[in-house]
Amino acid sequence: MTTDQSTLDPTYGLTLVRPTHDTVFSRSYAYPGEPIPDSVMDRGIADMVPESNLARRFRARARELAPVVYPPADVTLGRDRTIWVELRRTDSGTPVQVLSAAGDPIGTLLLPARSRIHQASMRHVWVTERDLVDLTSVVRYRVIRGN
Image 1: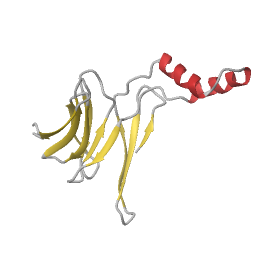
Image 2: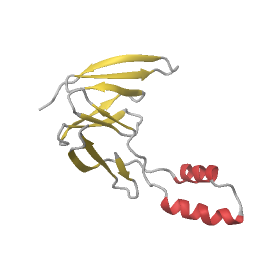
Image 3: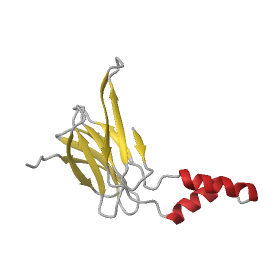
Image 4: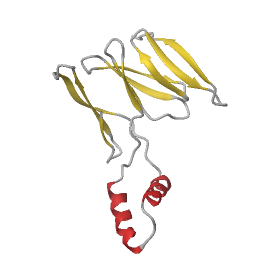
């Protein structure tokens, strides 16, 4: 997976390669990017480059090259060769884009906010979920395809 986070219309690229080195597909997909706040970016750059006269140029250049949106959070290859791309967690949950084995979009879903996919297929999704006191549970969701 690669990402282009340089605009407010970001994309991620996926290339699926077989163990025999044959390329199954290589495509780009748009995703709803969440802008990185200036305060977060400035704090991150300040942590990497200490304050000095020389460092000001480096900080300015780092700011020019820095991404403007957050990247996708994770990608999982499903047991049935589907591809599950987890986007950045929001207050309402974790958006997931699901792709077929050929790279065609199948659909999207919203997982609970404090969950992470560990195994998936078009029948079931196994996740770990953390509650508000950080206790972790393993949960299996059944996948029901809509029309």
